[in-house]
Image (tube, rainbow, N blue to C red; front, side, top):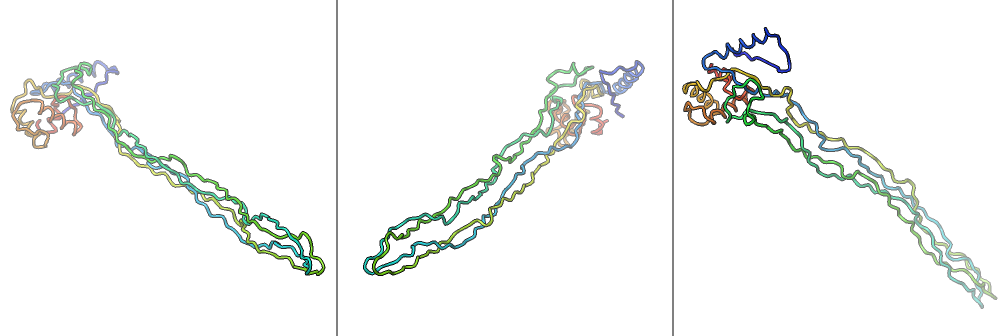
Length: 310
């Protein structure tokens, strides 16, 4: 059974524990065709979600119209006068302006306007992976691993379209001016003489408009809408350690061919098995290790055991 030895360079261990670990690793490495290789152990992730507001709530307004009342008023348009048969009375015309509808205020509501905005959300943090084209590194520490053997896996992002308020809802007051009518009436200047005749006054009915109830504003607020974006968070970053792996310099073609056959059956190796440990075989092994969350950088013993080759 494979034994994974954890070593943290920032801690100090007793000489006895260190000696025990070295003996255990050496015992695994002494197996047929197995060497100690420096590998990268993949990072561990946990499922998470990002909450994004895709629609902001806003206030909306509505109004009830003004309630008008109507009435009637009698206006005297001709004064009473006296006529005489010989000398009639003389008159002049007088023009008056009468307010028939008072000035009032009406309120108009304008709804909120929105604009569309795209927000970039990170769904997966950046990490590192082993370059399949790089041969196993027999090194004691991460610092001795060549730079071209580690590939940077960039962070993953997704774009979310949001609707945000460009201009909030508002009201506009509109003043309706008063309405008037012009009335012309006759006013006696000189009464009639000789024969006296009384002429009664003349009245006109004028309709009047008045505000009985002013307009009312009703306000309400719409709820915001949020969207949960699935994401993955790193809980443990990738680590580097020495693990037992297949000694490629001494590996036989039969063993490589069995490895290629298993990878071919699982859909990772597309070519015909030929027993040669080339770039396509390394790439297939690395992809199998990454999808099964195994250490990559060499054909590790745990990979062979997962494939039931050991």
